[in-house]
Image 1 (cartoon, rainbow, N blue to C red):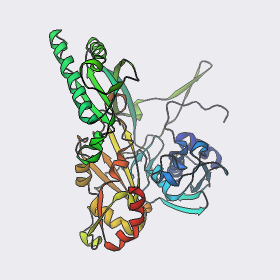
Image 2 (cartoon, rainbow, N blue to C red; image 1 turned 180 degrees about the vertical axis):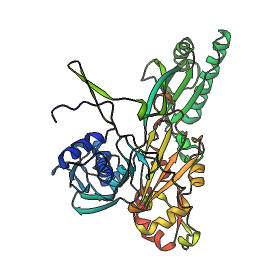
Image 3 (tube, helix red, strand yellow; image 1 turned 45 degrees about the horizontal axis):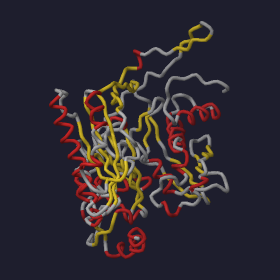
Image 4 (cartoon, helix red, strand yellow; image 1 turned 180 degrees about the horizontal axis):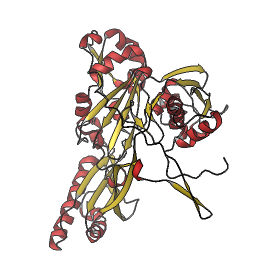
Length: 442
């Protein structure tokens, strides 16, 4: 097609559309639509499937010339992911698996406008250098609703950074942040401006985002950056906050060295509200030269009720789990966001590791690991086809996106944080992965 007219569509649709045209797939050919949508999902973030943001980053060549992905597609829905010869990056089962789990929730019900996808039986096979064959996606009819995404203004925010050096830099940074907040709160009271809606004090370089899992030695670092974020219903209050940051350089900690970002800007807080709306109440038409053309849209079907996934296997499935190793020695992982929720995909490096991952990475255990960030429950889903698990952490991003004050408002580092979690395994497996442990420790 030379011209495509569409409303806002999901990223994967720009791959699915050409495949439907080329192979003559019908709008109700849900198995192939699911496969084409998976191809689009893998390609939509460019080099993220060809080695970008890969757990084993040191094994990826050519960051300065990363190859963009290619999907060589067949009419049955299977396809091979590759990249142009001579470009940087790499395509392996692991790089493809990480991207497949990127920013999804229940892999049995990845809901798109054209099809409801089930990725639990997908298989990945390395069929050559930088070539991975993908098959096994399953599809059902789409739901009878559209997802409506709306934004609304909700007060204001300001974020500033301050560099602090010298002995006990982290402790000084925390005190500076607390003092600035205490001082501005006093000034707010004097002006009847009300209190902050939210305050975030995080010290970059002191592993504040790790909570209780922060390394003890890192607290003694001599160079940190204080990140101070605030929200308030009044722009005038945050304008005052912006003016009161600089005086810290002459009245608070010695070693306060830099305001590289300058005076913080006050910005509106924009929040996302999502809901479902019936397709039958949303007529679709296209107007061309004054003529209105009605567009037929499938009514869809109600999503089936999916029973909870099987509970964690009995301890007997993970025999002799007496030696703990870090998760990164056993698995690859990648994380992302959807609104205020984060997801973490974990893929076993070897099928033999799956029982140990299943036993150790329970919903409760992952919730405890992220207790300092988490405000909702954790869900776990299993993908047997690629020996993987997907975790959804609800209300874990402080509002998410531009509504959050955190250093990591989209959960991009969550998988890396989980990689340090100890997993009990057998002595034989511990001995097998010990070289990987040594590499990570270095």
